[in-house]
Figure 1 (cartoon, helix red, strand yellow):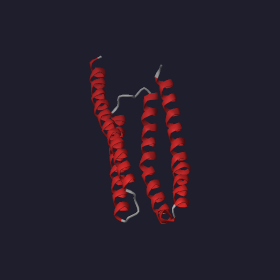
Figure 2 (cartoon, rainbow, N blue to C red; figure 1 turned 30 degrees about the horizontal axis):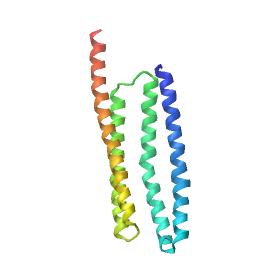
Figure 3 (cartoon, rainbow, N blue to C red; figure 1 turned 180 degrees about the horizontal axis):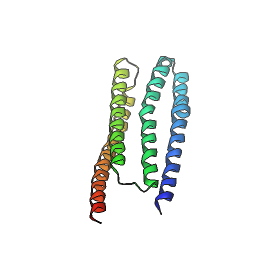
Figure 4 (tube, rainbow, N blue to C red; figure 1 turned 60 degrees about the vertical axis):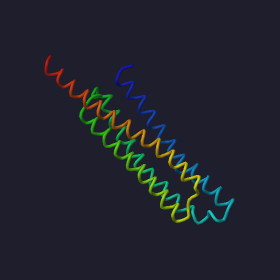
Length: 159
């Protein structure tokens, strides 16, 4: 598979992820929230604070998708191992880590305001662990891409 085809398929995957995210953020999660508030009136006061909180967590996710699009475009232009891709991956790692921190602290605040269930707090720890793994993976990829870019630059100078 050449760089152009790889770039095309990666962009298709990113578009699919973006669409799935919109379905989850604006379809599934509001429906679950509505179902929970209909079942127990105690939860009705929790609906909008939770929805705003969840939607705010989506902003960094879509920012990472935009950065990923730039990386994939660079891959299509045969600049896979570049300082720019390393920088974009590093920024993505920081965005993911910041989003996870925001998600955890938001859950804790909602818990302290008695607007969160202990089971949701435990589930949020699992989500945070997955997010931190993604952040660490992006940071590692950034490091490896930076090293590969340096090696490629040295190789270009030797020829």
